[in-house]
Image (cartoon, rainbow, N blue to C red):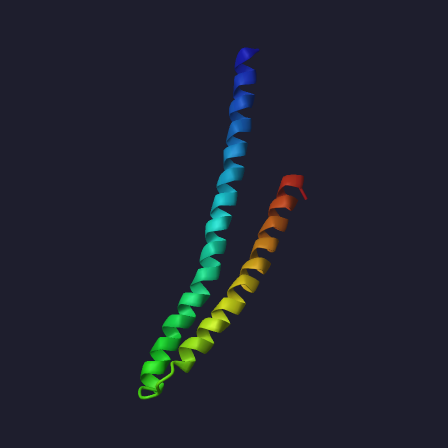
Length: 95
């Protein structure tokens, strides 16, 4: 009788750890999903400024593409996270 209870406790503990790991991984992916469009905008903008507008005093492309990354990144992450959470809830409910 004691072994069965111990096994149930281990299984419940593993389920809890799995849930916390899922949240941690989702958070890391969301942070990258916000940071990468911004960094991509900075890098691509800098490259375009230096190759298309080498003598222009203001880095227009860098500013525009960075602003685009700042705007688009959170929107993409919001849509992605809500989809993942809905999938997780459906899986937990067995639907």
